[in-house]
Image (cartoon, rainbow, N blue to C red; front, top):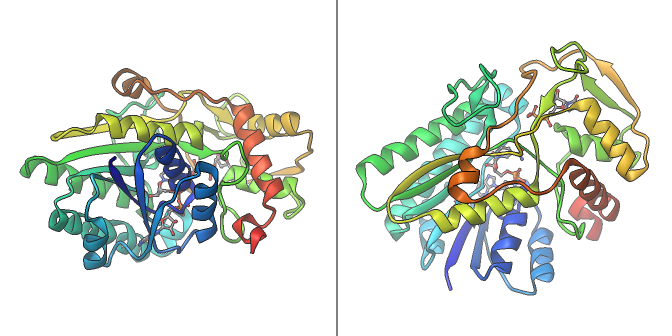
Length: 337
Ligand code: NAD
Ligand code: UDP
């Protein structure tokens, strides 16, 4: 049985992927500093899967600790990192330190332990303002903030390592907008403080924690004037990692977009959420958020063709599952403390 080393495995996307790995017969070691997650997520993954996970609390910048923990692993899925675009503008060093330096230390530890396979969480934000749609993997790269730049720097670093060292295998996954939760409502997204992203904001308005949603602009060149994004169910995203893991061989470098290939506007999201959950979402239109692109959605044909993967869950499932998680866990993982 293969052991997969999952950095950031207690986090949002990591926890759903770990659950799927366990259900698919892999052994898993989670390495996470819990800076944006809770041990409770790991307990719930164990409960849902009926299997145990080895959890190591630590920072990816602690090279020796990572190298020790990596022993016996056959591949790394690297989710650990910080991800708030706005914060990356106000505190760029935090992003270069945690994401870029952190990944470099992880790569050094992998070299020491002779683990040569990695799946890396990249982001559609590296494309910047789309020059054409849908966005394929050949689209020019032009990140507009330090977060996006940290992801692109890392893609280049991985490419350089691949080019000069035999036997490495990297799978770079550029996520579009992951939302939703496991259908059990036991694991999901648990943002700290006031959420930045649309769906967690909507679920907190639905629960009465926040009074209304602010829609950032209705004067974009889109059918209803609000921003359009490619939302993907986190379980579909997790399945993409499984397909990628199966494809990693002893010498490969691949990049894939993971999205649905469809864009929905903010107003479409609000309407769908209201319809499937029978809840009213009060909102007001405010001015555009600085740095937002009008429209973004993926060309996912490469992942379909080469990974045999495509997103199966629709927007209604995403909205229902996000709401079930919020209802069962009004204070996120803190609800069970
Ligand atoms: P998350 O914050 O829920 O998970 C990240 C996990 O990494 C957390 O558990 C956190 O405690 C851990 N972590 C952070 N820094 C660490 C460090 N230095 N050492 C050890 N652990 C550390 O985020 P997520 O939404 O699950 O995102 C996972 C990855 O996917 C991130 O790299 C993120 O940039 C990328 N990504 C996320 C999105 C999104 O919208 N959620 C979109 C594109 C890409
Ligand atoms: N959005 C919004 N109000 C919010 C949060 C987001 O109108 O409180 C809009 C945002 O302008 C964008 C879409 O919802 O058009 C998705 O935003 P999110 O931050 O979730 O993802 P990203 O902008 O990073 O793609």
